[in-house]
Length: 270
Image (cartoon, rainbow, N blue to C red; front, side):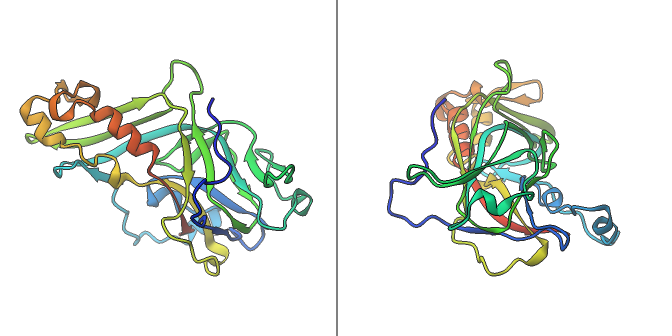
């Protein structure tokens, strides 16, 4: 298993994020992983859920486009994340958080020049569409200023993929499904494209590790390859591994673009 570098080799500043308290009765916040805003901003409690009105319009499902404009709507997406961790806020030690961490989170103080960190005790099975994880624990962590969230892909069993996704699309007036599944041990670094405003957010703020779907099919002209025969269908199912010609390495390119699409953002309970 490849190690994840603790620090970037470049001299660029690392983006920071502020984890604010999720509700007025808690000294912790929640980290979620998701790509569907209608689920990762779900309320924490039944009481807050009841405040949502029937007038709220549902958000559209997440989608992305091929390089030549074919639209794909994500129907399911999952991944296994190992070594999920965050650096401790500057100047803080594990003793500062006594009684604040849930059983899934462990804390390690700085030692031998390595920063202190909070980490998940075991791998997480992430349902990206529903913003849920197994084991079924909220990822509660103390509020503060943190660097980017670190993780890596892995396999919970040898026969299972590290990442899988189904996305529907329409071609020649018929519904089809793109199926993506691959094993990987690639590191994921969830960080903001620009430094987040660490002064705002309030009690309703939460932090979401997400994926930038818009990049997944960059430079892959799926519609043109279907038309030319460089991609072939198995009934109504498309797998990019069938690619040849202009789409010969489409599956590898999409995997690379998924693995480098991690980002972190601030969201609020609705």
